[in-house]
Amino acid sequence: MIDNTSLNYMQSRRRRIFTITLFWGSIWGIVEASLGLILHAIRVIPTGAILFPLGYYFMQKSYKETGHLVSIFYTSVIAASIKLINLFSPIIPSIRVLNPAACILLEGLGVVLVFKYLIKISHGFKLAYGLAMSIFWRIGYYLMCFAIFVPLKMMDPQSIINLDHFIRFFLINSTVNSLLIYAYEINLSYNKESNIRYNTVLAASLYLTALIVQWII
Image: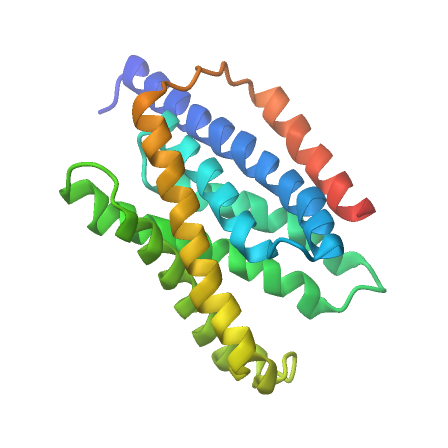
C-alpha cells in the first residue's frame, strides 16, 4: 500500500520530469525550426554538423536535471512532435516533415544507447562516445530509409547511396558532431552551468511557441 506522502512524491517527480523534458524539447524544436532554416539558406555550414550537437546539449540537460535516462528520449519526442505540425500543411510534402522528425527520434535513441552502455560504465566523457552517438543514429537512419521511406516511394534510393552524400552525411558530419560534443563536455567539466527554476506553465508556453514558429517557418 502506498501512503499519501509517497504518492505525492511520485506525482511530483513525474511532473518535474515532464516539465523539464517539455522545456528542453520545446527549445530544441524552436532552434531546429529557426536556426535550421538559416543554415539551410546560407549553405556555408553543413546543417547536420551543427544541429545534432545542439540537440545533444538539450538532451543531456534533461538528463542531468532529472537523473533519468528516459528523459533523453522524451526530450527528442517533444522536439520531433513539433515538426509533425507541418503534416497539416497542404503545401509541404510529408517526407519533408517525417524525415527530420525521424532523425530527431533516432538522435535521441543514439544518445540513450551511448549513455546507457558506455558512459555509465566508464569514467568521464571520451571523444569516441560523441562519435558513437553520431554513427549510431545515422546507421538507424539508413535502416529506416530502406525499410520504410524507399518501399513507400517517399525517397529515391539513389539519393541515399550517393557517394558524395554518404561522405558528407556519415563521415564529415559525424566527425564534426563528435568534436563539438566532446569540446562541450570538456568545457562542462571545468565550468559549472547555472541552475534553472522550471515551471510547467512556462514549459507549456514554450511548446506552444515552438509549434507556432514551426508552422510559420
